[in-house]
Image (cartoon, rainbow, N blue to C red; front, side):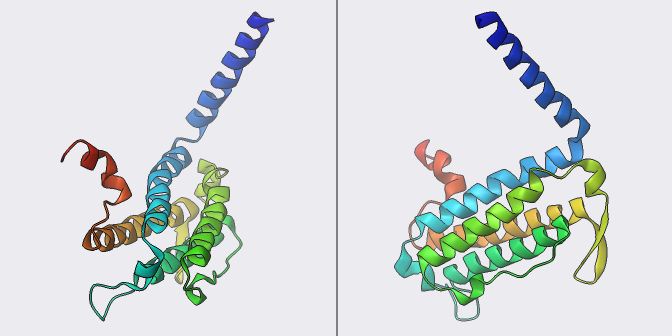
Length: 175
């Protein structure tokens, strides 16, 4: 019985490795998306609700508006990559619970795309912002946008004396 369980486990691991080998481009894109998705969600959860209205200068978005922006952008871009263009409604929300829920919902939309797209499907051309791009290009653009916006969020957190999620390990080591 133990031998059977071991054989099944080994077969499952080999299947995963084989599938990853068949989709190196899509696997790489998925791997790049995961950490920024996690950092943005953790940042949204770490910022106290009263600070969702904080903005360092009058001409920039509030922290809550940054969360809404990411959520709506992800729904839009991942919808394009899925072949089902859509719009989010996070910009209409202002409370932390509503914005965190919208962010999680946008992550679900994107997870559905990043977890299932293949390299071949990723080469399919779609329209984004009036330009033709491969689906993997759209997903890479989403990652770049998320990274850029997370950098802004990290600054907002620091201005409020909060260690950003991506720096938590370094802070614990005294850096």
